[in-house]
Amino acid sequence: MLNPKRLLRSLLQRRLSLIQKLTTLTGTVVVLFMTLFAWINIDNLQILLVNNTTRELDNLASTIIRMTHYQMLADNRTMVYQMIDEVASHPGIERIRMINRDGIIVHSTDPEEIGQVLDKKGVHHNPSAKVLLLQPPPLDHSRFFTMPDGTQVIGVTKAVPNESSCSTAACHFHRNSDKVLGMVDIIVSLNVLKSDLASYRNGIILLTLLLIILLGASLTFFTLRLVNRPVNELLRHTERLAQGQLDCELTPTSNDELGELMCAFQLMTNNLRQARTDLEEWGRTLEEKVQERSDELQRMQMQLVHTEKLASLGELVAGIAHEINNPLSGILIFSSLIAKDIRLDPALKVDIETITGEAQRCAGIVKGLLEFARDYKPEMIACDINQVLIDSLRLVECQTVFQNVTITRQLDSNLPEIMADQNHLKQVFINIFINAGQAMQELQQGDLLIVTTPSDDPAGGVVIKISDSGGGVPEEQLGKLFDPFFTTKGTGGTGLGLSVSYGIVQAHGGTIAAESAPGKGTTFVIRLPKYEQEADNQP
Image 1 (tube, rainbow, N blue to C red):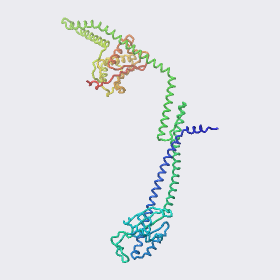
Image 2: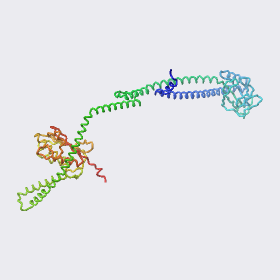
Image 3: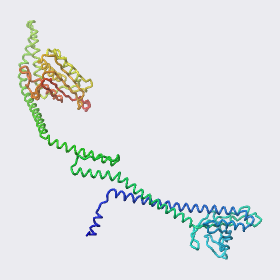
Image 4: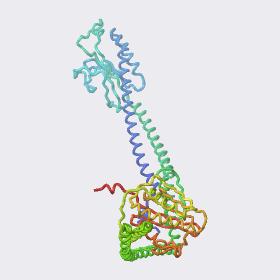
């Protein structure tokens, strides 16, 4: 047996669905507004019917006054009273009475009223009371009251004005000073008006109920279709997502806000599905990613080792350069003295100048080694990288290693200026050009050297690419190209050119890297920062 308290508690705790809430709220609002509309409409109709009835009675009173005007001038009261009785025989008219200016009913369709006196409120009095109308009544006067038999009526009183023809008529005499000769009072029952109003009120009520039912049904239908169905779809989709069914699809049912919400839910589902796929893929490729990270760390370690080698090389070079400078200074001094000695055979003067020149060249090399060993800061000026490349190529293109080499220049004219020491950059480019020429000479065939300055650096700097068609460098040797004393030329190279170039580029705030494969040539990529004028102009 069901427990009534438990059943009541379950009914109270049962939640209302969205469609029930919307239907209840909308229905309540519609009922309130339709009821208010019906009440205002009926009230306005009642006022309109009363005004129309009053206007019709006023017109009827005016018609009676005009109809009886000439009869009254002839003092033919019998004809006047007959005409009034004929008018009063129409349905709905309770009575018509004529009242003189003293308030005495001189004629009425109810014979019992004749001779009685009325006050201003239309109340009956005994004729002996002598209640007079001290002021003339208004031209339009209506009132509502209840007859002794309980009938509700409306009365309209119309004043009979004293016209000039009345005061000069031969049949009777009225003073010129009199404004009103009397009144015509028409009393009509309100039963017909109340019957029409009740009929209209019943129609309005039925129409209002019908509209409420139709509106409620329409709102319920469209709410079910446009709101409840998309919300239920979203709810079912959310439940599937909560169960981990990320492969489910949600198709928008409309192009309104709910449709956009469904699209957003579908986008979220796709993102969750992609995230789960990425996690699964990450789990499968975790070992590969760990290996890639290990290789990257190894490359970074090799870079650190390379930096340490350069530091050790700098210390070694500094010591060697100081030792070499002393004998070079002696050679330069004595060669200069010999060249100026008048005892020198003119045939030997050329040889002495050669010795001096070569000694100066050695001094320049030693100076370069010292600058490499020290933390040398180049003399930076704003320059055009394309012009530096052209000057560097002009120095090497006439050498024998470039006799069978076609040099192609692809220089972008829209590159920004850079801050650089031009002589040091020329040394870098000349080292790379000579290495490329020697690498291509080993193949003993016509080859190609391409110098490119593309304007595709994301950082906004300058990129220089120098590519040759030589034999290339094996992958295992690429990481050692910039190590001191490492060379791929066997006994023909010192292994210092690229190391010095590496230091120069780093001193300019740039980077240098090599890309190569056996049989596909080698490409050196140099990146240098652009000249920031704003930074230079700051105080």
